[in-house]
Image 1: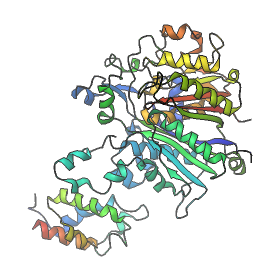
Image 2: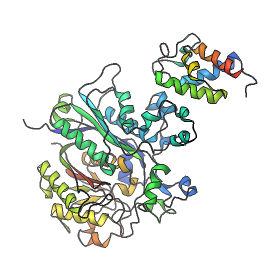
Image 3: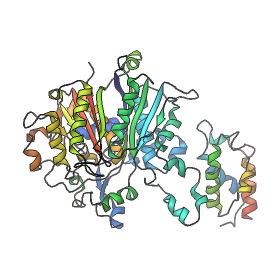
Image 4: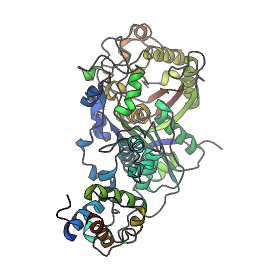
Length: 86
Length: 426
């Protein structure tokens, strides 16, 4: 399943996952790599674990608690997926 | 100090025969059954393979709920509560709070068992735990399982800052929630309360009832005939899901803001038969039922002959003739002098903890719009009922007529009783 893992398709899938958890006042178009999940995109911090579970399912990877702590921005999350799925 | 008067100013409903008050009222008038045969139950060897599941596909959830609820919420009991609660709030002419907190308003939204509600597209939580995969439960298992989950999620949409709580008292949960809100408002501790109850649906909730052999066992091929309260052939109740919500408010507050008023809550009573005498975990102590009805009438300061309609608990079980006997005793009215009596469960099934609030919404609609909905499948009244009351007291079609006073009762497991009296506001 990871034969075509690239920066671009990870980003597309990740944005699709994150979209459901966005606060109502945030538009999906506002998501970009430098945005902080909690501070900028106003995602409820409790929902980070749900995003992690969705990512694990999507990319068939396992994200440990240490890695979750480093998922601050959208780009951090993309990098983490690329690293785990490599 | 004189108690404050309390009125109903908004209603919302999710029922198996209609979602939203307009669809629900039309269904009530037409005598539309929401009961269907459910394939899943058949595959699982559940004896009662019919039930009432609100048709969420008939509405666009995105029109009502935020994205997160639509895309990620898995608990139907909570979805029903949020839909009905939001509808009631808006129907009362109120808007959800953006950043402010409204300390003058609160919520009592009860639930039966949110844990056993169906988990849409998601495994039942205990399976993950037993497989050693509890980390996969995610962040919402607790908030969607806790019995206060419906109240909590609903308030995330509304931002109310007075008392926000969840009661749980089996089949009286909904009427009890409204009673509790009524008593709270009477003392002036809030201006309005959004009260109601919810129950999800499906195999996990219904399986246990099926095992008790209290569900309908003879109508898998004729679902709409399954729920037939007061019938000589009633074979058990038909389970269903749904939620009802009512904004109740001090008359003072309602008049000050020019709100439309469905009815006044004149009074009510909640008690228990103590699981003594004829009362058990599952059967009511008739003495306590009669006492509860009489006390509610006394609290409402009306005479029994003012009652136009009894909205019964009437579940389509062998308890129905006993319930009618208790009404006859409590009201001291019988034969042709007995009021009209109908059973909302004949159309929507028994929505367990959701029932009381859905049925109170039906009462508010009947009193406001002057009709008495039919009680389905009552062509053959149980002989123990027809020997006490005139057959014409049970409407087989919709009666368009003046309705001024309705008395609503629910009775529940644990030998619990709750009765509420509503009157048209003058």
